[in-house]
Image (cartoon, rainbow, N blue to C red; front, side, top):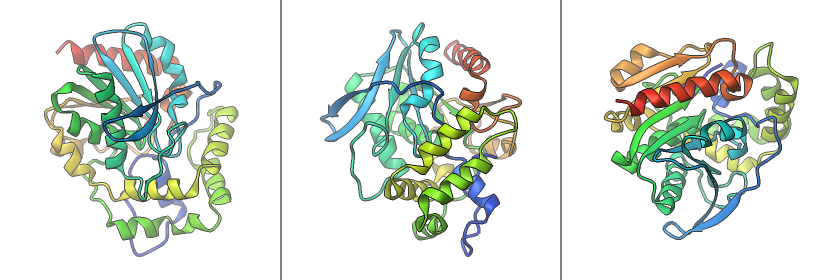
Length: 299
């Protein structure tokens, strides 16, 4: 299980193992009721992007969700981090309460969503935290926000930052096996691919339900956008911004490749977790993320 979504044979349909690598970009749903979001019109981009803010502080901590998910997946983090930081959660375009219709849902467009919210909030001292697909989105947003960003922190993501992107046509073709029977194929895949033996059945069922009920047009477009995103180039663009990865142990992070692409990095592994690290061990995850944030801002 890992975020190595580029390891795909472009001449074949996705096999079960490759689908597993691809869709591990998806995020989980928290085990708590959905948070009611405030929807605001972002005048700069003429988009309706839902976001919520919590707490106060000099540092703005921005949580970015992954594929076919929404900001409620960070429920376990809100109370903890809003005690010391200004916390922002965002529903990316076409997800959650963000009523945005696009021809293509790309990583770049999601990065623009993050940029738009932070411009509206006039945020300057920012750390971006992105889970799964939210990792590349955070990287893309950081490249646009420049020195306003103090660090990017990926959660079980960016495990092979040197993997080259697919062409857009090849990326779209990679999703063909899911197209005809999206709901059942996604449900079957999620049930068998995202978790470890100790994962909560409630978490498994919530993720399965949410991902299987996603809008296929948005999900398939976002998936193709993810596969075709040039992650190596994007990560190199933020070489001056510290990059931390808090990852699960399965499908190990290629640290030697990370060193070649981005020298200022740190990798932390939380053992005995599946892809949804922040949900399977929220107490340990929150403490780990807090300590890393404090280390980064102390530099």
